[in-house]
Length: 128
Image 1 (cartoon, one colour):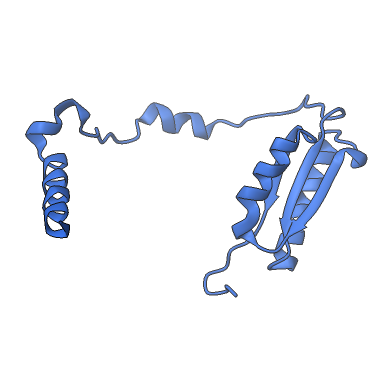
Image 2 (image 1 turned 180 degrees about the vertical axis):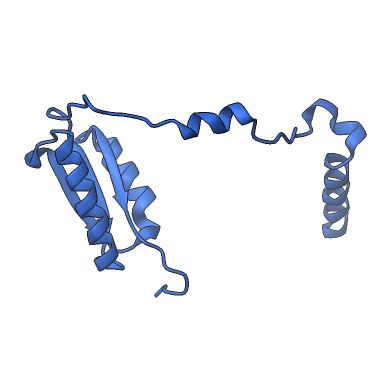
């Protein structure tokens, strides 16, 4: 039974990679056009942003606290420049970056905030 399943999987993989059978379903590889790159060269201005009625949720990690604190402080500074009130900024912390996506999802589903900022730092080799 196991041998026949391996044979079936091998055949399916071989068929999926056969150029004559994939035809229109084969991925098309394209290089970035120069028009796309030109858009990144222009400066974007957000002079008239008004965040006075916006509720922001900041989820930060406790791991690498010094670096994350710098990120959160910069985020809060930028939010204040957009007129977001201090009482409209909700901040919570979680153990590490692994928990960020699920925590952000739960906060989004709660409906208590209008936008979510996640702050975490991953440094190669530092995992407990």
